[in-house]
Image (cartoon, rainbow, N blue to C red; front, side, top):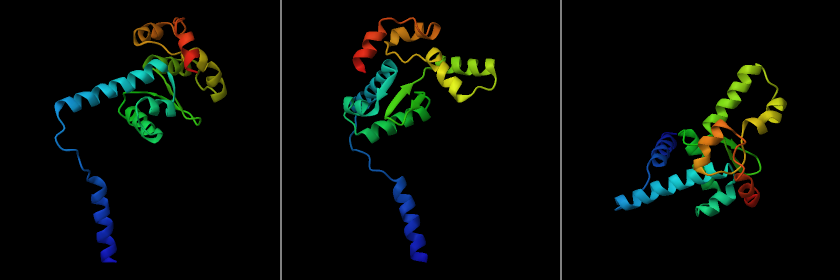
Length: 153
């Protein structure tokens, strides 16, 4: 029994220890930071991203891409919904506020009604980062995004 307890304690500590690469310089750190910014930017621009496509784009396994998206959500860098078909839908803070305002205005809202109104509240069209600010004011004001979204679908 004592040996089992010691083994369990050792296993717990081993799970918390990781081997870091040696000699990582500022250049490698900077490249990792740029890759992270590119990863987040890609998701924000596309709005709806197939997780396997995201993984392939950044040279990751699909599970690694899922884990990164979940970590970025937990850190507050991304917000959105991961569906059961393997897609992540990015929802901007302005869109979250629009959904919250709709619910506050209506009070109790059935999920079916919220789903029906989501097209008006959440823009699913791909767009550039420059258009993001304009889209917060007018969710349907980015006509140039429609061809890009059709091409990526």
